[in-house]
Every structure is written in structure tokens, then in C-alpha cells.
Length: 526
Picture 1: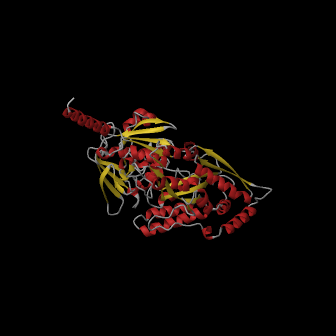
Picture 2: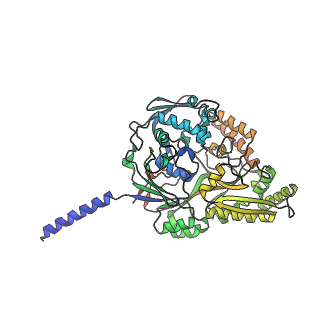
Picture 3: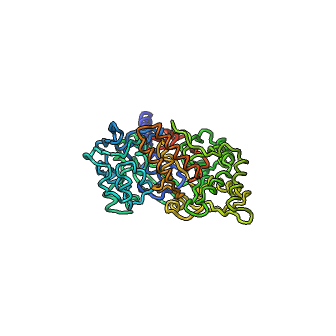
């Protein structure tokens, strides 16, 4: 073989190798703290589901890699001078994953479906800001009266009850995503199965193996598919954080959305800047069953809240990766002052003394111990928190037992209004506004796990909604409402969240942000 022929064959081999590498699938193995309860956008409520649905579907607006607002299924919009009427122009040529066009009628159908009582959507109350939203949801008005209409196939008009400053941010939430009407009407509950789910986002559903993985593949019909660089994203449930850490270290996971915080110092030493910890808009809280004795007594709820040492939880249990919390709305929302519990300024010893005094007044003591069960979902961090609280309450004569279930079972139980004493919960902001943290305690909210209610609270929340065009007055009213909630211990805030992400250096475009939002379409893998 001549030298020239050898050189020619070598060049051909290199070219063939380059073609093979270029055509190889880019796969992102993404740790996700739990399996979803559902992939129906109108029947979900957790951040674990939101991560998936953000990849599968596209709302009218989106949050980008930095959690900033951007156009989504709507390429533009206009707002009436009074802030009540939004007119959205949908993207020309946008289609569902099966090739059907995405139209304004899809959004009309989807908004009505979210509010249909038969859907039993936890987030139905989110659309109460739309004209006749509450009336439709409570069967006081027909679906056709909802303030949403298709002007033409590419123009959607939404009329609100009053000016709502956070409306565009709200539309980034999965509850407002469009769903494919023909699939639902033809397939019923089966429409969310692999091979059947028709979506309009950057990815489609290929596989769902419970407790193992959910495989999404790039949607070639997505309007911006040319810019999507991850071909396959495997969402892998990682309820056991320690196991997830080992899988990450072994290269089986490219990222994970949590870690065992008691090991944080060692994790930082080993993985250095792959550990992403920073403030996020979220509140870690316990919900009392306020419509059940003895938890219906606000004095008792207050005593227990005072007795819990949040500084210990933040420092020792969470390794300073969380912040002690005394309000439902965390700090960080520009222009808003959270309503802090009055005992936050007291020393922990003084709080405990006051808690003992209240418990004695209520008749609890050595001869009549208070028995309390704490429910929590699977996670070393949640277990360690519950165990620490169990130990903190023991000197007060409170006998605490613990009940752990997997995340899907835990939240399914809370959403069904099951019987419990105290349950671990959390709220991560759906949008950058205090209403997202306060709306969950309204009577109408499907996320009001505590079944708490207050007429004064409802009145203040209604007044705040009516003051949508007066931001200072609105925030003042929301803060007054929060004070009612905090003073009554409708929920018991314990900590403010930080995000705890492990991110491989191979991933680019995974940007830290206060919403902890990371759509796969903006990420690439080297």
C-alpha cells in the first residue's frame, strides 16, 4: 500500500469517526427527588412534576434558564390600560407533537378543564383571577362564561376580574399549560401514557418505568427544536439522597436536585464548585390538621411552634443550607415585607418557657401527655428534621411518633384531606409574588392541607386582589393577611429554602436562580 493511499484511508477514517460522533445522541441523566403523581398538568402540584412538565409542555409564557419571563406559546401580547384584558398572539406554525396546530381554542379548552370541578385540580383556584373563574369552578356559572375566548386561531383574549400584576408570571406554571383535547376525549385517562401523550414542548414522553426512570426525547416538531441540544433526558427518581450521591459520583447522574445535607461539608470538599447552594423562594413548613381536635386550638399550635428551635434545625440538621423561618412568605420578593411571628425576637429559652406555660394552661403535663404524629415524605433531610423536632418537644412532655411514606403517597394523602396530626410540607414559589405563598391557605385552595380558614384572612386577600393596580396598597394588604395567618399558626413555617443542586461540569447552561428552574431545552452537555 502506497503512502498516499494510507494517508487517504486515514483521512476517510477520521471523517467517518467525526460523522459517528456528531450523530451520537446527547443523553442527560437528571436526578429528580421523586416520581410524579401524574403527568397531567391539571392534576399536579409538586416541583418534582413541574420539572418534567416544563420539558413536555409550553405555556403562554415561560421562565428561561435565569428564571426570567419570556414568551412561550405566545410570541407577544398586549394589555388593556386598566390591566384587565390580555390579548395573546400565538406563534405562527407551532404544532403539537403529532403535527396538529396549537390554537387559541386549545387554551380555552384547557383553562375551562382546569376549572371544571370534575377535573378536581388542586390549582383550580389559580384561575380565580380570570373573570368568572371561581363561579365556573363552583358551578355557579357555565364554562362558557369564563373570561377566555379565541378571537381567531392565533389570538387568545383573557379578561381578568381585576388587574393582577403577577398574571404573566403565573402563566409559566404547569396548571395553565395547554392539553391536547382530541387525545383526552379519545383516550380518557390513558392520554398521559408513553406513546400516547401529545405535548407541545421541547420533549415528548418515550418511557415511564415507576421508581426507575422517565425518558423524554427531543420533539422534532417543537418550534425551537434547532436550538435544543439535549436529545434524551432521563428523569431518575432519587428519594434516597445518599444513594443519589453515590450514583452522581459514579457518573450515573449528571445532576441531582438535592443532597443529604448532614454530609454537606464533605460533599463540598469532594465536589467543590459542582455543589450549588443558594437562596431560593421557598418555605419549609409543617401543617396542622386544624379542623381536628386538639389541633383546632390556635394556642396549642402556637405553643408547639414556639418550642421548636429553628436555629438548631438550620445549623445542625441542614448544615446552614437553610435559613430559620418565621413567616410563610420568604424574604427576597422586591417591595414586600413578610409578617414575622412576634416570638421570633425572643430567645429560645424564653419561647420554651412560654410554650410550657401554655401547655400547662391547656391541661397537658406528665399525667396527660400530648400525643402527636408527624408525617413526612421520604428523604434523609426530612427524617432528620422530624427526629430533631421529636427530641425538642420531648422535654415538654409531648410524645411524638413519626410516620414516613414515599413522596407520591404522602402528597396524595394530604391532597385527599386524609386524617393526620402534623405533616411536613413545603411551598416553592410558582411566581415571584407573595400571593403564591398566601393563596395556599385560602379556603378554596386544594393545597390548603391544614384545612385552615379565617374570614378576616379571606377579606384581606380579596381586598388585595382588588388593589391589583396599586402595588404598594396591595402589598400592605397581603402583609396584613399574612399576619393573620402567622398569628393563628394556620401553618407552621420552619425554614426558608435554599436550592441544593449537584451539577456535573459537563453541563452548561444550568444557571442558578431563586426559582430553581432549569428547563432542559436551555442546557447543553459537553
